[in-house]
Image 1 (cartoon, rainbow over the protein chains, first blue to last red):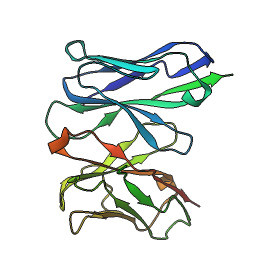
Image 2 (cartoon, rainbow over the protein chains, first blue to last red):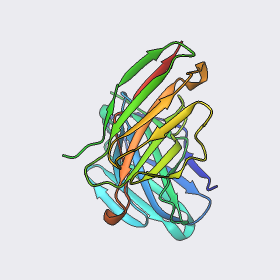
Image 3 (cartoon, chains in turn blue, purple):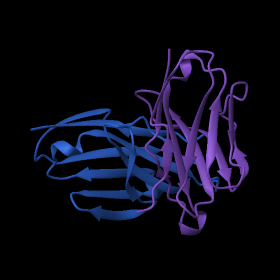
Length: 110
Length: 114
């Protein structure tokens, strides 16, 4: 099946800093989603971004499908940004299933 | 705002007991998914429904796990008997192909098997 690799595995930031999370995938995809898992375990949708660039407040994401990677940018980080960020892809086989990466754990210190 | 509902939020059980989890997807979403997330890992698909039909249950341990979506709306995931290794977060998600296929997740059920 498709492989999804996220980097870095862990990231420690000072409040106010900017950061970039990366997601590489091994095959063509129909869709790509970024999630933030809160301390209670719920996955919160951040972006649905099979290609191109989107922005939502201090967060933005870019997917370059032809080069098989996506980037999530966090600007002016806040302590509430702490948590695990997951990238998930739907392979280009039209089966509508998501394969997740292992996640990036972000800790923002005040 | 439409949300995926799950219950219970937490479940503690002893090994060899039966447990059941319930999920109510976003209204109108024909596709429903059950995922299992072990601590420190990403979620992994257990079963996928399209309406009331199972599309993919290749990763479901069928000797002890069962899932149903009888009327094509809400769904139940059952484990019988539970084993220590089943301790995990069980997540339900739903999507609509007509709306592009973005998946939305419920709050999850955290299962602890003692």
